[in-house]
Length: 562
Image (cartoon, rainbow, N blue to C red; front, side):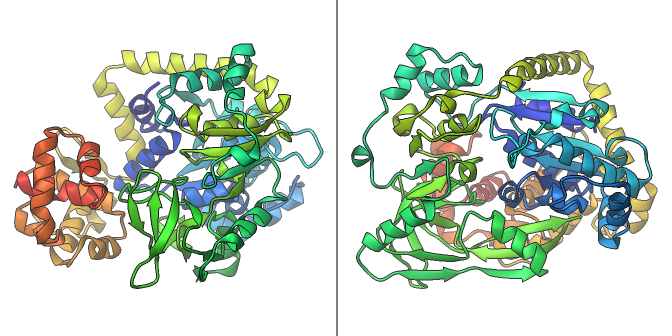
């Protein structure tokens, strides 16, 4: 199934299990869905099975969101007590769409506990109290933490069955483009590793002294990671600089963000230090996992990083936020870097790396080797210093279940492919209205709102949809795109998307937004756009060597059409 096909199904309001191999675009697809929900006036509750995953999606763990905390079981009295907490009850009662990331790391028992709390609070005897539920993850990756006892996967739960989930199994590949490496990864995933696959991996086996100094080392255990990072930094000459994390919000929420953040509270760097970016750049200049070296400091003392691709990036502090019902409840701010000499396989999940040194001789968990290997884009970027049999194994229960997931996904894809387009639109429209949102008809560029929304709308700009009217007014008044982002409370890409919609319906002039673009860069971007000669922006971005963000390029492109 393609990302577009999955997105169509997600928009109907069905309960969905979104899965696929590493690098298939699960995170991108769910982010597109979240953006669509918010543009429709529906605020999703975004959660994850772990703190690290939660920070990637600006959400909180399902344990915190549902109030179950560290409990491993709940009595009837426990359910009543948790459901009686005002902040928990208010959060769950207001919820409409619940998204749970990294579902593979959530046990059936934890899944059922969260379900019990939702049913109690919402007083609806349906899975999760009748919420629309979206589960995201890949069971071939790291399983739930067992703490020495047998743990069932979430799909073994009765709640999973009662949700009547539609499975969307993404089959495109966006991380790896190395056919030989993909064959090896597929063999591990299917439980069919043969001599030829083993030999391909062992062709990348080398002694630790033969590995590149600037590639991160992935370990199955945490014990050596901090020691290695600190030891390598000490070897570098020159004075170190320390960057302290700042925070806003309730202490308990901030603590959760800090635990899940891949950048440390105190980041110590030196010139020459090997580093890794820990967050995606809104402008597309780097992603979580991009490797580089600190080559100096700017006038403000911020680190300048040269990436493997030769791009020089002046790194500025970025925020990790915890959002709830569209409001930021807590945030931390730090340079989005960490030392890249060593990290655990667990913390690497979700990253895309150019290279990694792996000691998989002590792999002890199903999926650990698969996760480590699948972080890297090409086989040539794998430096293998150790390998045991467990590293090439995936959980036998998952092998059988995966066939069911693939078959269910094909059935869902075929059913929606045969469905008339207007029927799919009707389903999506009903879902948006049922959630109290505003349906935006892309074909007519008009917004259909329910009476309550019409009453509350402050749209006074010639019949424009409220969200577009608000963006247009703020853009007209703002001195820069950054200022517009702060005033509107949306990411830059969404604001530019709104301007593109306004242009399509003839409600945007050049004077509305031209002041957002520094005049000295317009000709350069114009020339790159003309040379590229296509609608794709990636060639333009790379031709400009990443000097200008995708949003700035899109704004200049808008100037050409206005």
